[in-house]
Length: 384
Image 1 (tube, rainbow, N blue to C red):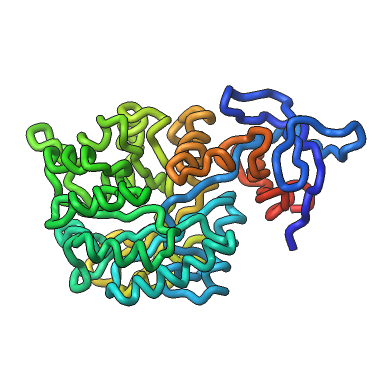
Image 2 (cartoon, rainbow, N blue to C red; image 1 turned 90 degrees about the horizontal axis):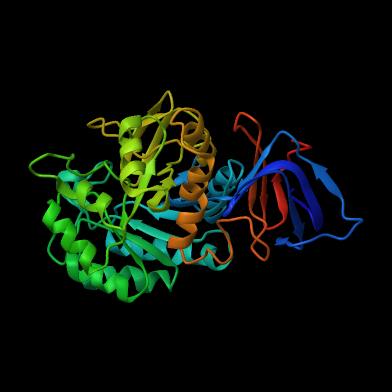
């Protein structure tokens, strides 16, 4: 059971704030929120030698702990959510995969109840409005053009909880669907696309603001035909998702994205499937069979990468220790930027008074030691 820290002072750690890193800082937690000050007799937890960073925010996640957000029961979905919470993700958007429209609409209604309960932060529809040329781990037989009427059907079924829709915006109806999403305050994400540079610029001008797992499931960067990657990286209106698991991206590609977009326009995601936090074996992603070997998920038929087994604590540690990114930049990418995209930065994404007490405690080597969500220890850094 999670233990509530009704009032406590977390002291002695290196604390990452929007203004920078504070050595031997203090975070005061009171009633599930971060407070500006504490009473003299407030209990103190000594976290010397550790880091305290904001709770992680995952915009793109299909499951974990052996459970699928696309097909699991409520209990199974919550198992997946809890799995990722124990790895530092205190805010999570559930992603679907391509399926029949009626099934996706029904699933949206089901997941919306978990959003309304506060267990999920929203719904992300990845498919069916994607290119058969860049389908990745999606069933080609179930793909369709992004007809605005179909897009609207999913938004209505989600009852206001839809946060993002991934589209191949070059397909018929793509630009009109982007405009529809923008009008309803839902993120239009360019992904699983075969678009040209020029077509991608059109989509951004129409209102697209996110690149779904940049570099993956889209044409590679070319010197004569730069394709969508160049358009998405160069436009200040676009935030680019990156899967930092060492499988989806070469370190040089990640460095390129940070160099061109800057830390303020990067969002680390997991794109996790059922096997995250669970292990190797045979799984299903939507209607497709997936084999996970040595932590890498691939379709049984064709061998395409099928999501990841990543958790965000691993992405954080890799970003600092392997990619050598500044800790402040990683916090932007893993907490602040996705919180802003969700319109929730007033509540989450940074360690500031008045915000939810969502935080992660890391040791000196950036290994996860503690997780707090709304003032409750999910992983207690002292008790373990």
